[in-house]
Length: 284
Image 1: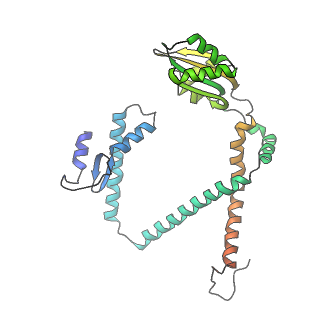
Image 2 (image 1 turned 90 degrees about the vertical axis):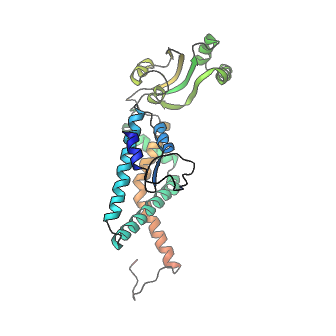
Image 3 (image 1 turned 30 degrees about the vertical axis):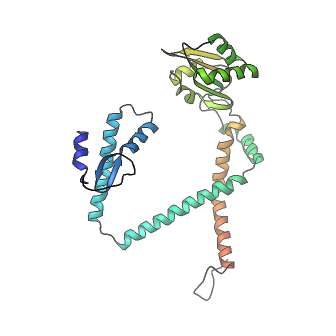
């Protein structure tokens, strides 16, 4: 069915020379093409897709529906000044939004001081409770046939820098996966996505600061938990900092943008960039 659709809707003849930029067309309508590489990229970016063949067929179908409906609209809606005006307004709105967000990110973000973040945290601690189990530690995945497993277990548990150095050297040639997150709080869901356990099962296994080891048919997994934040406890300041900064930025955003607009307005008046074609200028 899919190939029948594709064959029926590639309207460009074999004699036409079209530069596809090195890409492989899957389906085309007139001069619009959907490329295999774009679909493959979509598949690679979404690990939740279970049936790739069904996904591709549906994706092509939806792409065709959109292209064909757009072509139908172009044939039935005459180009007019009203459409041009709407496009111009949308473009203006889009540019304004992009510029304003860029201003906020570049300038207002810098105005939020660490002391303000700490003060907000102290005054609003009830807002910052853990919603997901977070860990600090390390994750190691090795083959069941990997050498020196007893030594590896000892190195994983150790806080001695010399043992960690030995472990890192070992992982260069033997690890299938190695992640060191002693300094970074990491959600248990992120760790679960990299091992052969469900999130709930892994959460039960790491219910305290300890070494966790389990295996599947081919590999052994080791997780050494050096710190642990269960659901419901107060987030530490370093973990809540980004959230607080976003709250403070959003609370000042409207005032900041109004200030910027006024500064640009005043500069334009002083520079003579604005010409009023009436006797009186608007009141300040």
